[in-house]
Length: 344
Ligand code: HEM
Ligand SMILES: *[C@@H]1O[C@H](CO)[C@@H](O)[C@H](O)[C@H]1NC(C)=O
Ligand SMILES: *[C@@H]1O[C@H](CO)[C@@H](O)[C@H](O)[C@H]1NC(C)=O
Ligand SMILES: *[C@@H]1O[C@H](CO)[C@@H](O)[C@H](O)[C@H]1NC(C)=O
Image: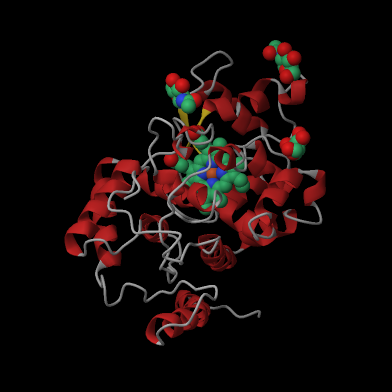
């Protein structure tokens, strides 16, 4: 389709896709008593039980953003880290207690994943309006979409109806896609949850906003692959800039913008950065520069760098796919938590 589609036709195309998925849900919930088939999520899941759910979450996010401009980025990352481990089941949100180690403690999350108090605030507001109805896993899905939209990105119909799980997987969380994973391993980790190369590239585009610690770039600046040289796929001007922000023996935890051009805006600049060797993480730049990318991810990076509309369309669809990773819809396996950090 080589049309110059307007934002409106983009949204309506997504609405059509979401409607196709949602139809099944209406059948299950409205048609009564369809037995143990794979239940589906749907956009209208809370229309009768908590019609203001979207607005309530949105209100909490808008409020939180006033004192924390980073919060939108942090919240979408929570949905990603939740969905990749045991599916989108709120497992990330459970707290550690004696005899139970939370995913929050895993290396990719500890001192890194943030925004939990805002999720709790959204949960509290929802419990007030419609007690026991909206799951924490769904709050993360809603917060992700609202965050992208409020940052200038696309909207999509958020599919809902996930239940919260009763357990978590620290091992699964240790195995989340990592900044030092090669392109091959990133591809495999996405494939393992039914996400393809387009999803990998599109979803990586979420690094168009948010912050990142120096510790994830020092090897690229000073000692790439043990060579004592910088990463040759790192733009020299950008390297000089990052070297001042992240000196060799400086604070490994000091923060940088993932996208220095428009740090808090959801746009296609992540991809235009990659075109100029200005990706922050090795896992970012490889999508364009790894030798194996030439016939796989690089053409997709090129496409998104040249068309924000193409990126937004793919991103919205990939978010819906990511949100569909192993949702729990069987009440014998899940619940609607009263508090996101604890099972009921
Ligand atoms: C492709 C594999 C991915 C890798 C290796 C990766 C890695 C990382 C790392 C290392 C950070 C910085 C953490 C820190 O400094 O503490 C980060 C931040 C972030 N990631 Fe990813 N990520 C990936 C995919 C994704 C996806 C799929 C999304 C969402 C759809 C996402 C959204 C974000 C956001 C928004 C931030 C900034 C968070 C904040 O400011 O609080 N990432 N990522
Ligand atoms: C999480 O990070 C803190 C601070 O660096 C550290 O003290 C703690 O041991 C870490 N937790 C785990 C489970 O590794
Ligand atoms: C890819 O994963 C395998 C298996 O976990 C590991 O041995 C290998 O070092 C990884 N390679 C890269 C480049 O991350
Ligand atoms: C560079 O990395 C290699 C391999 O990781 C390591 O053996 C070496 O000590 C590092 N060099 C410096 C100066 O840190």
